[in-house]
Image (cartoon, rainbow, N blue to C red):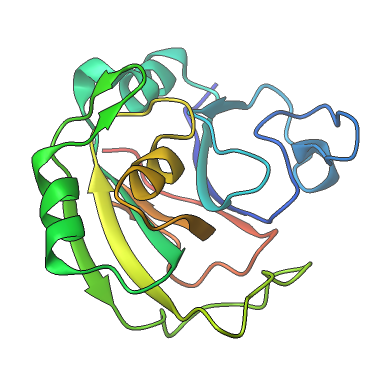
Length: 182
C-alpha cells in the first residue's frame, strides 16, 4: 500500500477523531478513507489544518514533539496586544504546566482567505479585536489559547494555518487534498 498524506481543513465543532462525541461531530462526516489516521490534534472549537496519513512512521514524525515541526496559527484575540504582550509570547510564557518555548508572534491583518465561522464568534462591541500569527514548536493541550490568555488577550477564534511545509492554502472548510510526502 502506498503512503498517503492528506491535508484537511477542519471546521469548527469537529473533533480530531472519526467518532462523534456529545455535541461535536467526528471526521467520519467528512472523510471516508479506510486506514487513515490523524497526525496531531486540533480541539473541536479550533479550526484549520489537520494532517492525516496511513503511514505510522510519518504520523509519529508529524505529531511527536521531539521532531519540533512548526505549527502556524492565526489567532483572533480580544483586545489589542501591545509590544510587551508580543515580547512575552516571543520569550516564552509561564503556564500551569511550565514555561512554553519561545514563539514567533506578530500582529497581522485579518487573513484574506478567511471564511465565515458557523456559529460566528461572539464579540463585545466595546472591546476591539486583533489578529496574531503565532508559530510554535510544541503541542501542549490548548496551548495557544492558554498563552494568549496568560498575556492578557483571550483567544476568540483559533485557526491552524500550517504544519511545517503544509498549509491551508486553497482548502475550504470541510475539504481535503492529498499532498506529496517528502
